Length: 137
Length: 248
Image 1 (cartoon, each protein chain N blue to C red):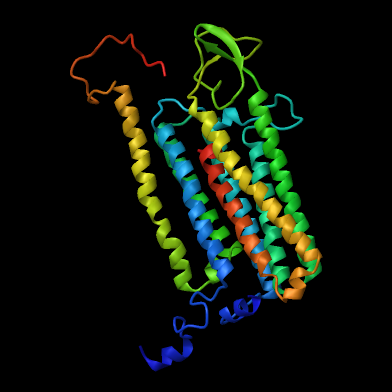
Image 2: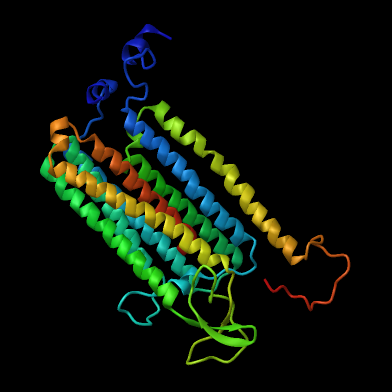
């Protein structure tokens, strides 16, 4: 078993000695700095009153920073960046499903909210009912 | 294709070797992690869907503002930042364990595996404290015209909008918040915590095997590499749990 496993591998990645440790330290510092920026933005949203639109923009920035963190963890710590391209593709291409997955479901949630707020009627109601039934859910 | 290129590129698909230049176990670990990504993704997207469907959602800065031994000090996100930092550091010690394994450095592997396991246990302890604090930390909430003191559970959420009643003991009274908040929080952080727990168990097994010299006899430390992939994945998932529950 181990014997055949050994012969499966054509070449080994350079372990790289001290260079590699330096790269790891650099990545760690980078991840910590990104986390601190994220926290700073999160606390800014909490501490200072701001327009909803700007808040949404800051949240978008935080999401992009998190994706950068994911890129560094997968690429450097998990060494996916050192693998051959076909392997990278078999991991990354299926993940593109997430683009549809996230967009479709968040829009669904939003539509749900709109429907509930308009009590199942069209978003611009033709006739206004008495506001007594302000939703208890 | 030109013959020059054929000389540089090995014939990956002609048999006898892995076309992806990795051993079977590592490739399967990657595919397992990819499928696990979809499991976590489905959970988080479901949470996002419900959150988008609500008019009101609790502000994480108000919910997660406690720190052990700090009493009632308002320290938004401080504790969860500590947890994030612990997990990043334990990820780094894992990289160093894998690196020591590449050099067949048994003592190095043992040392860094012990640090990684300690990091995992520290993270789990932090999570246990946070859960206990949320469940037992009771807040005054206006329910059906009466003020009740409730904690955060899968069926109760005291983090609603402010209620139109006077303060009690210097605390604002709120209405109940969306009940899905607790369910998603405990469900998803619990599922992640379970991954951390199983990662710690796997790492302990790897440590015992390393101490017993199993990998030395095998001549390589590839098992550490596979355990390392799983451990980094746990860290990776936390990046997104942290993002979805605490930051935005």
